Length: 245
Image (cartoon, rainbow, N blue to C red; front, side, top):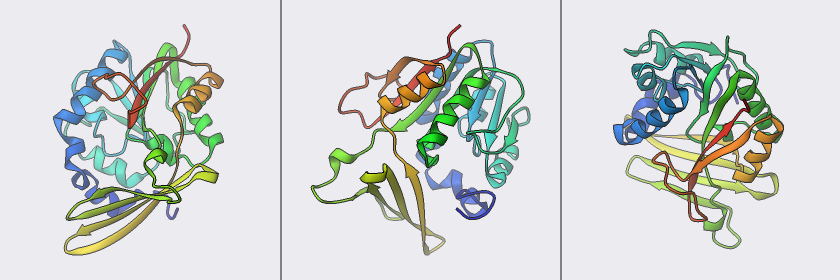
């Protein structure tokens, strides 16, 4: 990782909102915000890796006080420029350890970002940091993919996840180390650009153990934000852990 902003530096931040327009569509955003509004109640929400505010801005517009933790100054700058972000505070730092003032009814981490934390110890630290920010009875919400190992052909380590006219994406698995590297080839202004980002993939049961070690218990798990049942065929999960009252 190079630079203080990590992989989400100025060039990435500048085109982040346009890189996947579907992720910003009401069909994708509204169910997320609906659940977070329900969990927040009359309390505050803390987003880990708030980014450019894809979720935080519409959540704030629904009347929930929102604060964020974000490593990248470039991403936070884009957030601050958006209408509706005026009341959203941002703490710059690593979400596994950075501290925000006060406590929150809900802490959330979306879009596979728990996998950006590259060691098991740091992922556990993220759960403990989330729990430390929660008020009693508060919830920690994580959206993350289910590792696609069952879709790898025998003997292969790579799996394409996007083949489009302006983007080719390939996930490369390191099973021995529970590692994953996403390779992105993107067509930007007529030029193909390459970016590789490392991740640590993680299983639902492992996350449950991290939550237990952080003093939280599983409350709900769904296959998506529309709260469809989680099954063996689910490609991702949205999980909610609760801090005891």
